[in-house]
Length: 314
Ligand code: UDP
Ligand code: MG
Image (cartoon, rainbow, N blue to C red; front, side, top):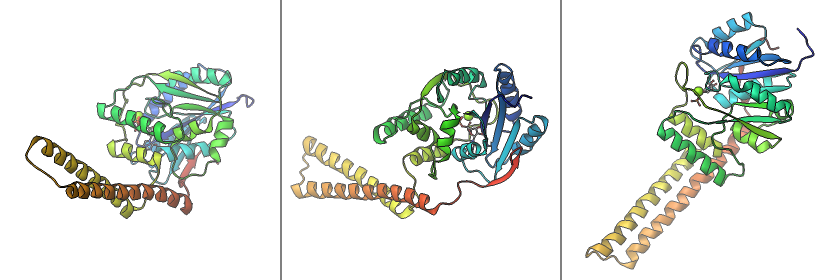
């Protein structure tokens, strides 16, 4: 072993991927053998899997000294698992965030590394095609549209969190202290010299996506802000309900006014409109709750995650 070679570390979040870990190792080993001049290291972060993922990770670390593992004490979510992985890295020249289910094809790693050698500090990826349900595609499009429209960070649609980060970028990322993380957003916010590599995503090999509609919706909302104030949030929903109701009522009144004999007094219109404005106020309060919730989680300063066990890392 030549210790002089720079190290590139793969950071792999794992949640119930027992059927994929071995296949993943085979695929990345193949890629490692294609790219010369680096020490390759793989850190699996078991995000509280309920299957035997951790046993498999331990077995792999015994067979291959270049593999390390971190077990989180419960399921904290992919974004936090990636953070735990980033913090477990020591002295690597670059890291690559990659999914364990082979939906982030390791075959593009050589291209990413080549771009990095060309001087790009962030090599992100864009996914060309993926067979998600129409609803999820629509949701994702809406999400990016809203995010780019209403927030100050510009986020590339179709970009994934499969990406290579230079050591400098990783060091910057480690200084971030916010609790609620949306990695892609944070990394895009940081700037640095950046480029894209494209790939087409295959179907998931084994197991199923752990992101169901609820999780995705929650992640989408979290990326805007965080909430923990239920009453105010309910107020917000109530406001939206009132708005929808009064808008429909107003529409009904106008239409029936035009097409039937029905006549409504100006006061009636005013009443309905006034109620609509109440709805707006309530909805606005709900919005405020979202922001207060965010402040709340930042202020509590709980640790972001708890490591239960490590292999290969002091
Ligand atoms: N993952 C994780 N924690 C979770 C959910 C997922 O670490 O709570 C990991 C999962 O093992 C996989 C990656 O994050 O390596 C992407 O998850 P998944 O394939 O379920 O998401 P999708 O590909 O549908 O976006
Ligand atoms: Mg996947």
